[in-house]
Length: 125
Image 1 (cartoon, rainbow, N blue to C red):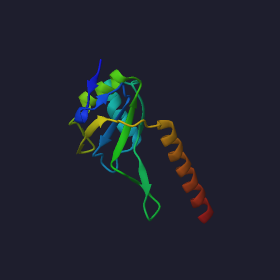
Image 2: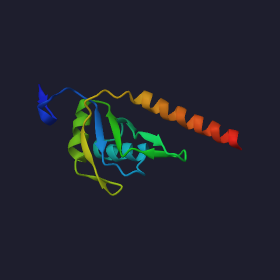
Image 3: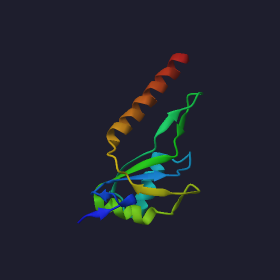
Image 4: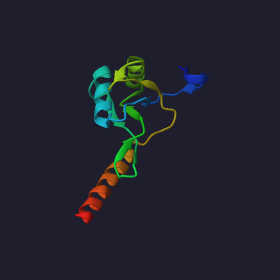
């Protein structure tokens, strides 16, 4: 079965949603929990909220995230149920992610940055 997404593009069995308009304080755990409540625990395998370092060295959210699901059916259900929902006072804008996101790599980079920041703090003590 061929499905058409935004702008008439063919949508394959994607497992990842792109979530825009996140509150800058929304964390990965909150995003994952939000979708688990909608589609069920175990259906969401990972959530990430990309961040950048501020000039003061703190992590700042970029205001968007990715949610990865165990299967395409759960992903479509999450898309349908979460559209227009509020999270942390912001109305979510959601679409199927058209690029493959390696969630394990995103998580690994986040962990590496945290370790580097802790090491840097330890040096300054």
